[in-house]
Image (cartoon, rainbow, N blue to C red; front, side, top):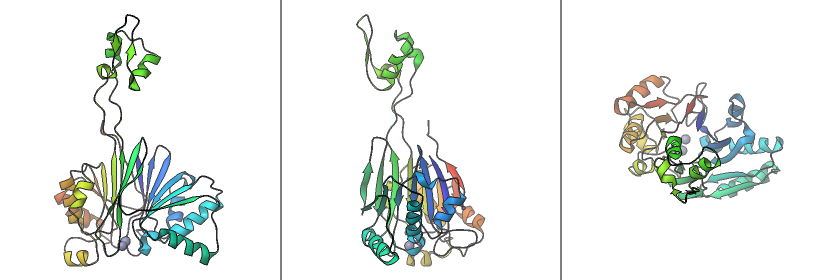
Length: 303
Ligand SMILES: [Zn+2]
Ligand SMILES: [Zn+2]
């Protein structure tokens, strides 16, 4: 998986930070988290291929998270997109899109499938599941999590050979989890030649939220936690009143959830000095990065 930060600011855009939008690539698919104003232009400036967009996740109906959506969807239609696009958002998205279509008098030449969600497991395939969780903001807002299924354990060819299996299709059969019967009648089971199942990766997107104890569970041992870090932590009252977190709050959650990496996002335009914010968070959680527009992050497997 690879994350590209397309817009790392919040509230209003600045010369240095666009409005929230994060693209996550996985096996040729692209997931987009939020779609602030200017996102389609930012996609063009990045290596992300708009045609690869599979799913868009909108956190909430504040303009800084959603004003780029209509333009992006219209442009995809101009690009002759044919495959359907899945859009996940809080309730209200169907009405929002209907109004947009009516007032701007456009239609999309591909199918836009809108899922209005409020939490829980919102998607499941053999390869991964997606979850949503209500956050603590001034309006209804969702955090999202992508969690990959376990992968088969490591295959040890030398063990298989020792047990009388010849390299070739039977290796594949064992790797796929099926037992193999040898000419002498002995049966070799996958567990004899493979290690234990290996963990998949987990990525969490949580912005525009007060710090929440529930987030510790939601983000437990995530490979990457993208978390609201709008304030420095020196002005806690303002962060709470506006439904946001400080970089220190984000770092505390990352530490308690034992995540591998914390990415601070939704940085307020008031802070031109990202290094100062980063230093504050690192005191609590050293493996912190402050998001910058167009930065990319690889999210590797643990083993
Ligand atoms: Zn926001
Ligand atoms: Zn908001």
